[in-house]
View 1 (cartoon, rainbow, N blue to C red):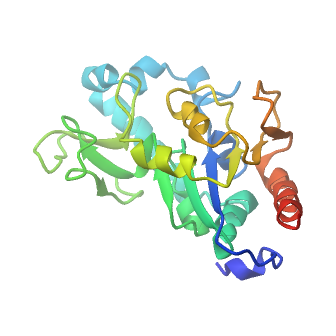
View 2 (spheres, helix red, strand yellow):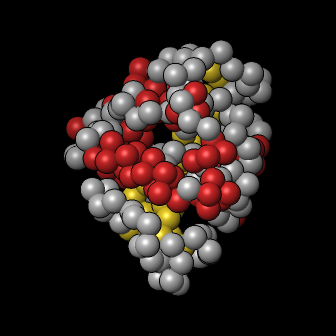
Amino acid sequence: MNKKTILPKQQSLPHRQKIVVFTGAGISKESGMETFRDLDGLWKRYDPAQIATPEGFAADTEFVLNFYNEMRKMLIDIEPNHAHKIVAALEEWHDVTVITQNIDDLHERAGSSHVIHVHGELTKVTSSYDYLNPRYIQPYPLDKAIKVGDKALDGSQLRPYIVWFGESLPDLGACVQRMQQADYLLIIGTSLTVMPAAGLINYAPFNIPKFCIDPNKLMLPSNIEHIKEPATRGIDIFIKRLQALQQK
């Protein structure tokens, strides 16, 4: 993707300003990715305790693996949308960090080069015993099923690299640091209710410009401007706001 063909030329700034983009399911929903928490989401059809906990995995490993294998296959045919591409294109002019709650790889496929996943990644596998150990986290082809009996590098049952309920998140130190250094904060497609990840936005400096793109009614702090649109429309409004701020 040629990022230069997407964004209009922006005002030259004395330094590359830091933009942190915090994304949730809403940005990928427009690409066709199923969400977990919407009214028609996966949690309405599946019991989270059965498919998204270590206990559920231990009780019926094959069922849980099949669920994630289907999600992984679905991801093969899903493409990044306009919002993903604009976020990636911002890197031409700014220092951009994407912190995402999503387990897909659509930001990476759109061209974003600095993406931090706080809930894991469908494109990777890990150990059942030591799931956060970088030694055991490996890329894994989306079209290759994870089966009962497949072994991780430590000899344990291979599992998707997904952080389940009741499990610890990866080290969020890098996320906190990027939030603290941000010149702008852009939130896309999240209700900011999934803790502790949603609490990361509280580390951003209070008086920096902050925007949230989401079509739903949200309870947001007064210092966050709510762009009440889907991601693919709201991102263009954000770009206009950003350009206006930089011309002041």
